[in-house]
Image (cartoon, rainbow, N blue to C red):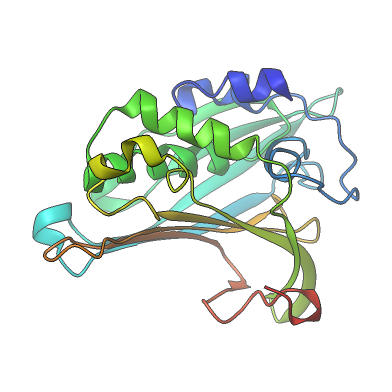
Length: 243
């Protein structure tokens, strides 16, 4: 685990084979920490060759002239091969249409490449709204992901059926009182994860929320939702109604 966390240098799909290789925790085991929930799971363990994971991406801001265009697209992960050691070979397609990127062949992984894409977007999104050093932002994420606890059992809907899963929310910048005055009011930026062993690819949803109470500061939200998952702010209720 320490190797995985220390390897999150660029949060880019180029490095995904390094970042997300070789998880060993059994899929049915309950995550006991943030790092266990995000990194120790073999996310693609139930994905057979030929599986296509489709994630619906949406970027929205009430002030696109300041933060860039709003748009919707898809992220696709094709599992092309299951290797003898249990790892998967994949083809990752980021977006379709005008914003389409070249597909990437990522081999020998057990984890879902969309996690790395989300973390990359989370860091770049904070840089866009708050400015500052990318290296600093990545380090704050590393610190947040080493924090014990924070994983809450949850239920949500997938393809019309209720499934059991987990959710967590991290605010990497809130605790940095030393640099809070440099964050333009965005220190409470929140990043949400919804996961379940009962959905293919393990990750059901990711959301980023950037907002500032300072007058004239634009807000920004990005979401990545596994096709078939129903998840709004009122969905994914925690077990026993605890938040």
